[in-house]
Image 1 (cartoon, one colour):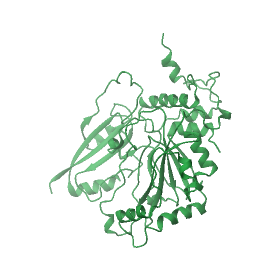
Image 2 (cartoon, each protein chain N blue to C red):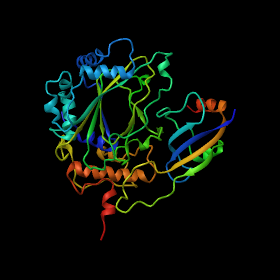
Image 3 (cartoon, one colour):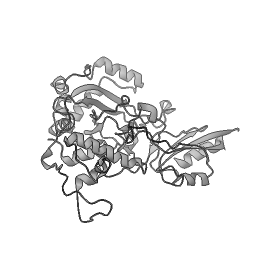
Image 4 (cartoon, rainbow over the protein chains, first blue to last red):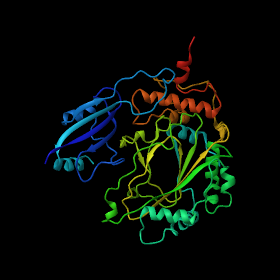
Length: 101
Length: 304
């Protein structure tokens, strides 16, 4: 079976990878029981670094942006988004999905 | 029965108020009977069920912008529900005594048999904010009426407390599957949740054998939303503010405590911006341009 990509998105409380997870999402390249909105109330990891230690590879992090003049107090999207990937055999994808659900 | 100042503080801080089991069983039964009978038996597909509901006109088709209370008068059982003193009082406290009707809808989330072909591919609804980008200071409310008891398996609405002041674009937040502190509605029959228009939410997946019904109506103010609740205990004087950081552990201030309670999902820095935005909303609602809590606004307004 060819490997498939799993994506883990972690939202952290600051721009530092070693700060707490406040939100998360998972998207699997294979598997019969895909993750979906509202499928868990406990984060899969305590911090972003914990995900690294479990074999996830960081592929993107939110840049630090200065607030737009006049909109310094506006809040909108989750600010500190980190995208991780893990390449797994598709059978393992399903098992991994169940483990984290 | 108007809302109290503490209930208003709860709404400003979290974007939601729950009137649990506020609708009596007799009205719940009448509502369910009215919406269930056109669907009939045989577990029809969702599109077939909706076609039958629209053809039976179980809800009135009303244009947006009309006077809500005037156009719902005499409509059974909705008039009875919105005339309950605690329901009407909550509406009037938030959007005034002549709110405008925006729209309403009956959300039907069908149950499923334990082994069912229609289960495959079903998923919960993505997280979203209703309508579109809405940066107003004034706000609409959305009433979510659950006429039947909602169990965890029935996939009641999921929402993120304290998300209502974030300015996002509807389903742009669909990527967010889970947020620390998110809530899944589980409630007794006859509960009404009142949401600020900006709350992040989504329908859960109904994995029970029972069809779930949710009646939702959006209402808009037709006047400034200033001091519309029971303000007999409102104190906007800036004397005797509570100490900050080095606090007085013996002091209790329920309004300030509720207004300043952070949600567990707020980022470390934007959590403080959320407090500032709550305080700006509080100034609007109280009609007090200088009111502040914990010095958040006063500090940054001290410009010379």
